[in-house]
Image 1 (tube, helix red, strand yellow):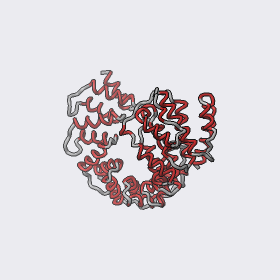
Image 2: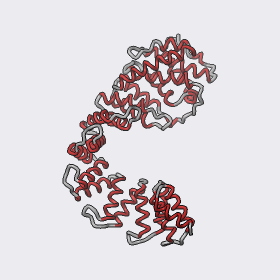
Image 3: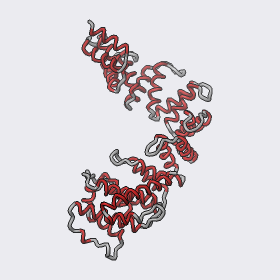
Image 4: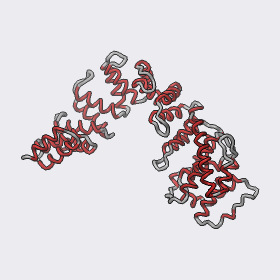
Length: 428
């Protein structure tokens, strides 16, 4: 499906570039005319890359290009590689990171397979060259790039059609920084790997379709990919598949199948699946309500580091729910674990616990600290509580100015109680 889309897109890009290069450089116009998605020779692509590199070097006033002669016995491919090696430092300052990598990758190929994908990369080089070649490019540091590793991956992905290499390339293009993040490139390589049954690629591609990253959001396609990966034993794909059954996304809601896949993912160590099983047993979704099982799963999830479970467990201990005795200290412990991960509700609850002395020890300064952390994240109730503390002077000296400030911020956030109290203070 994506391969057909890519081929269609490439043909449109070739036509567009033909028009652009016809007026700027007839040599390129003639060579681009030799590129078709159906049939393209690697030699043609090497000649195009060779001219691009020479053009970049000439624009940067390099005077020693005569050391490379296309008519020498060496191949065009060797000419490109020699240019890249000879003027590496200069080119790294003249070419954006993705384009630099594409040129090295394509130049290193010895044979052409997956031609649609290679042509797509060549078109990226050409579009940049003719549209953005005069832009100021920020040089990148050595540690930003290990092009030898990327080149080896690219060759394996293209020449050997290695699914693991294709997946790793997809990962590379989805993990590099925001400046060079290229979801369409990730999709291209994930598609190839997924088609060969690579479960990691199927899962990753499912995420792209589910979130609509680089492609149109498509729950049906995400479901197909998650299911394919889950059947192969991929834990996170199993959890996401269970979520889709649980929420009725891309498939009819089915609590039996949801629980089946949540069970599978939980046994594989997926903390989120453990948490959802806790919800299932607490609310009796497709099963009998079972407080003991709910608590067990919440605790396992919290201990595995899932932030929502840590926060939920804190509330369970604090309130004495699910058959557990009230335990403010344990509640405090798990709220603090969630707060360490910037859970805003945990900020608020910690402020409440300390300001009210729910553990048996009241610490108004700690309460103010945690309420302020929640307030800074936009929690209007935390702003209201800060207004109360400063207004009442309970545990600290009364401070009307601070009370007005926090009531005002809460009122601006839409809190009606704060608005009333604010007017009362201002009318004093």
